[in-house]
Amino acid sequence: MVYHSNLYNYISKKLNELRDLKLTEEIKQSPVPKHIAVIMDGNRRFASNLGLTPAAGHLFGRDKIKELLEWCFELEIKNLTLYAFSIENFERSNEEVKTLMNLCKEELEKAASDSQIHKHKVKIRIIGHLELLPEEIQKSAKNIMEKTKKYNDYSLNIALAYGGREEIIQAIKKIADEVKNNKIKIEDINEPKVSTYLYTKELPDPDLILRTSGEERISNFLLWQLAYSELYFSDVYWPALQKRDFLEAIKTYQQRQRRYGK
Figure 1 (cartoon, rainbow, N blue to C red):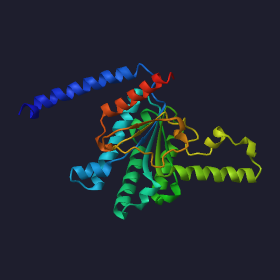
Figure 2 (figure 1 turned 30 degrees about the horizontal axis):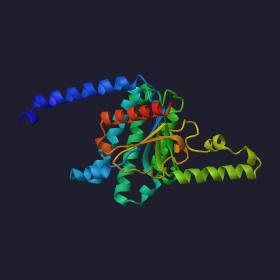
Figure 3 (figure 1 turned 180 degrees about the horizontal axis):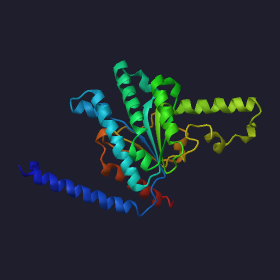
Figure 4 (figure 1 turned 120 degrees about the horizontal axis):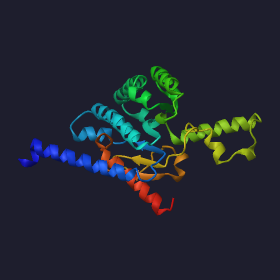
């Protein structure tokens, strides 16, 4: 009975908040990642465990993004990239794809007038094969990018219709075309040059890649950019990710950097 009382729940909540506050202050004593990329996995399994539909899981996952942004603001993590919808996701059922597309459209439209986005001067980029998306989402994506293009304090990058191999192939095609038209020479092609042809050309490579749900694979995400990234795999489903889980990922990153002497 005690464990289910309001008093116990209140005390437990306050203790967790204090632990998170202490861990946050510890983390602030060392350099935090300049760029974190997140593979948001586990929406459907989270919903299934609760007896809910996949659509409900995606709604919970959408709400978690807002929390993650607040955590990044608090720690002054300047660049955040989210793997929201892969090219492979188009192979899911028509109903689920439609639900995801509707959610994307709603959130892009909300972000355009979100006070937090404008308060923190967040530049939003939508990266991926945008031409594969429905026309109304392309329009919403272009609108939010236009509205935030002059912001430089923070960067939120949303990967939609994205595939890492496809991104590299597109870069190769652009480079080949410019070599063919004598715009660049073959000997000019190097790692920094190739990076300028990627969707993330204006961003630093991610310091840390976090994947939720317990899966330990990259799933065709930022394949060129992750060459020197730290990888962190969390067992919790994306909608269930708590601030403590995120802080532990940052703490682990910092410990690895100290161990490597960086």
